[in-house]
Amino acid sequence: MTKLAEDSRQDQPRAARIDGKAFADKLRAEVAVDASRFAQEHGRQPGLAVVLVGDDPASQVYVRTKMRQAAEVGIASFPHLLGADASEAELLALIDSLNRDDRVDAILVQLPLPASINEKVVIEAIDPAKDVDGFHPYNVGRLSGGRAALVPCTPLGCLLLLQDRLGDLSGLKAVVVGRSNIVGRPMAQLLLNADCTVTTVHSRSRNLAEECRQADILVVAVGRPGMIGAEHIKPGATVLDVGINRIEAAEGQGQLVGDVDFAAASAVAGALTPVPGGIGPMTVACLLRNTLTAARQRVQQPQG
Ligand code: GUN
Image (cartoon, rainbow, N blue to C red):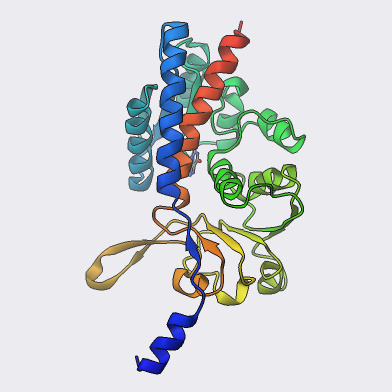
């Protein structure tokens, strides 16, 4: 690069890097204090059951991380690892027993499930009071009515980071790219509940870049490496990249990248989350926080 090009590049504004890992560390420390208080008051640790069906390597890594971090903050974890050939009936029987188990406050079934198992049926079998992911229609309905308790972990992590950075979100224009049940839809609801003006765009949307450029807050959760570039971003916007994509890098090494082209976006955005180290750690921290929320609610309103 010539000196001139280098100078002009240095003159470009660089987005602040939003450190999701540091924020998640702080959140986990708070959960550890709450978990210890819960254990003193109730004579047992809060309990999280984690169910994994099959041998998807990425899911195995996520589940191990969730259980390790649960142990670190004083949450008892109950792992259930089923083979890829497990039947829907077997999984439903397991969920039924976890629903009845008083040591278990929260149930997480890692998605995606094998194609032979109906995800919707499984999610609806989880006791809504133990639905730590907030995926059960009861909790989805509460979120859309603005009365949520258990909110999907990734969008909750995004909201906490946004509030930490921007304070009151009221009146800001938010654009959510992606409409999945796990991220896009609940994210839009949470932003609406925070008084943002919200637009959701997706694969059938027209004028994607133009829509995105209106956003003070841009949340991207699609699963397409680098799909969002400088032309999608309003100068100064806060951009959260939820994508975690493994791509082939030099010498056959795998590399994790987001849905946002980090280098291009950081020349335009005001603040931006990296991948890794942005939203990913927040998801697990929010899972632990939701486990405490479920545990407290259950002791206040004992089941059965
Ligand atoms: N798979 C990818 N993200 C999630 C999540 O937040 N919860 C569950 N249960 N499965 C997932």
